[in-house]
Image (tube, rainbow, N blue to C red; front, side, top):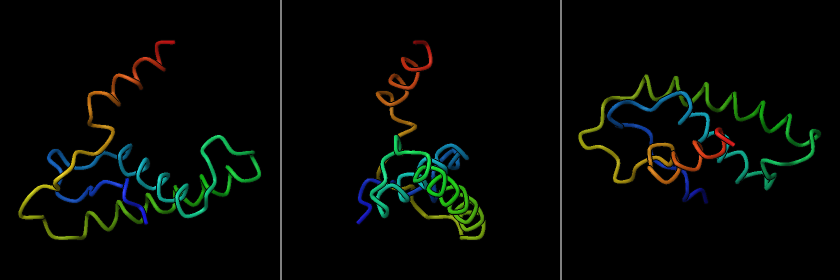
Length: 92
């Protein structure tokens, strides 16, 4: 169902809080069908759920044993094209 969510366990350097939060938000958007630009009545519960999921994932990643090999894909926030888009938005 969530093919776009990248594996965060085993990254070098380890997954950042921002990467974990982005994955949690992506998961919530996918399962609810609520877009990130939704009305406040929908956005607020989704943001709360994503924050809870991020906390759980952070704890889970800390408890799991290390991977023998890194994940096959790079998380979006580590991709140059995504970083360029973020930089362009913040400078505008």
